Image 1 (cartoon, rainbow, N blue to C red):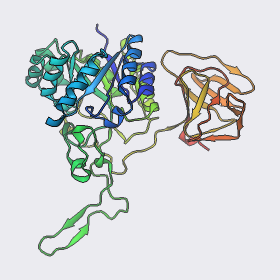
Image 2 (image 1 turned 45 degrees about the vertical axis):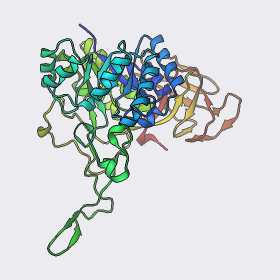
Image 3 (image 1 turned 90 degrees about the vertical axis):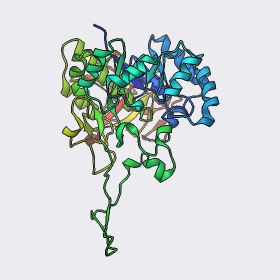
Length: 423
């Protein structure tokens, strides 16, 4: 049985390292404005992107390059140079949305496989066949497609790899084909600069054309988040998805989200996949862990349900909510210090969330203690001290002093606290 791939977002080099450390088999990232996430594309230079590809390959994992924007005529010459430059770095695939860019990529770099972006909106084996004939190796299915339809695509095109989104933000518009951001702020969604206008609160009015009367529909100072979609969460359906036998890759959305989000979602889905193959899948366990991340409320979307069967895919109250936990600090790559992300106090037990398949030992010394309690690891500081010996009564977010740990921890470990336990 071929094991399914777990594909995680890499918004910058650190997030790439975190995704790989927490269990991703592959990551996707972009450089320059030809990606559909311009903000994350700016996090990489060509030099650091090449280094990121080399780093990924040293771990025997893969990196797919996002070139999924829709270029104008004036940009084609620049796009050609971009493809040439990135292809020379030997990434494992290009993620492309536009048919013309597919042909261009294959002309310039025929040795780099092409994965078709979800923006291409493949819903049937007829569409899939067209792209397969063009030489596309993998199709990232539209978020609106059903698992049954994907089974039909695989039946007709067994050689074609299929990838599905299982977690992350959902677009209000059909397959991301949205013009709201363009109309309101001039930022073009399908060219990487969406302003997320669907997340804003709006006040609704009714207008009587005969009398000219205009009145508010909802008497609420906050307005209503009428276009705000909940976040996708298919963790409870991983078994069902893998049982189908037609999915080659599970994809997590979120190149512009936090390092903690990348680590937790990757580790949770990696655990769900591991548990599936070990015949010990526990849906509730993954749901509880994913609830620790910030989200807009969760929905299982349309892969396992038809759109008309769903009436809980929107959050009309607010655009985002805190998760059950707050990240207090993040351990550096070397594992010797941590940097505050919220607030750190002495005498407080912070839960440790560590990369996959790492371990620590219990210890107590003048700096603090690390203990194992009910299957979870915790750390507490007796004093907050830098490597140079400077001490603090408390550390708050924005403080750039690295705090020495009681003992070395796995790099990129997170210190977190349940929201109800915060001071």
